[in-house]
Image (cartoon, rainbow, N blue to C red; front, top):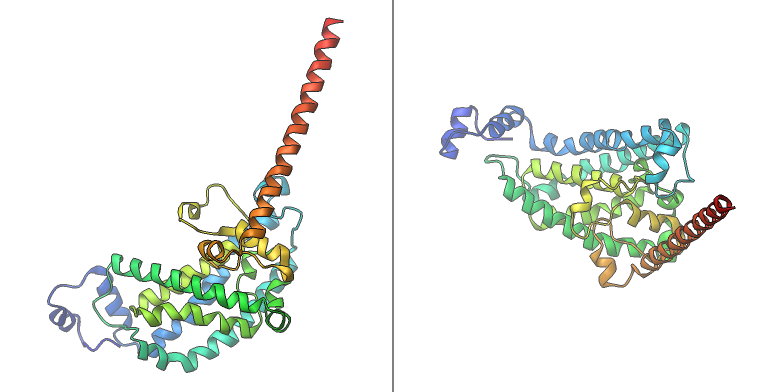
Length: 305
């Protein structure tokens, strides 16, 4: 809760006029306890989970397969509307019970690490730098947590639930055993714990992290996806291979970037798969070229006759 009764008091403490964003934040949060602001995470998570995967779900359900198949990583797999709905309901229930319950007990930790709610708001540069740190920390720690979940015990008892979708969809991004949701929450919170931020940045971090998870689980690899301009970004095709292999997968563990898999040699299976796919495509193209060449030669011979 901001410790100022009026905007004039807040500006006097800042020593300057508030920006429009700070004025809006003051009006929204001045009378709201910090604990309630923190609990916004539950609402934000459910809203983002509901809306972010929806466009691609509707595209898969409504668009003709001829239109979407060129962009589907696994074009032969197409789920029905009831299957999408079951995934959504099961995941939303787990998120509400785990993340919602966690909100009730984790607020002291948030205050202890220094997540603040007051003024001034962070600059765009400060927030961007913090978010970059959070993505890097989460990616590195998440890589090792993910590898642990692929041990025999971790997979059989916990991680197998997430791999029920061998061809993932956006709504399956957080589809997991309740224990996995809690376990992977540790890398997600590690960054803000190491580099404390403003509550608004904290909210934005979880929004962006969830949107990224939806993207990598979307099952679509569009050539115009703006994430292709992010250095070392894995994307849907990269993570889809991990789901496609399933239990035996020892490749592509990183959640966001590709450098951990490269450094620790856990991208070899994927690279071999890509090379084999490229070679197979080259052979198909060559066969089509030779067939077309043969037909043209036969046509030329017929004309000469």
